Image (tube, rainbow, N blue to C red; front, side, top):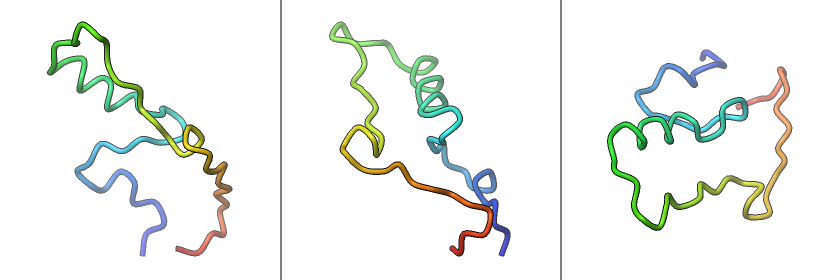
Length: 60
């Protein structure tokens, strides 16, 4: 099994490098921003989880 399958799917996924940038780009181009502004995107750190260590020899 390929260890790097992140780009093989058809989903927009947040990542450590760009965060929620892909979600925000799609949203900004397809939607009108509400008067109250966009809701915040929560990640693991925002809810008290992580940080998670990812190593080259991690077993999936």
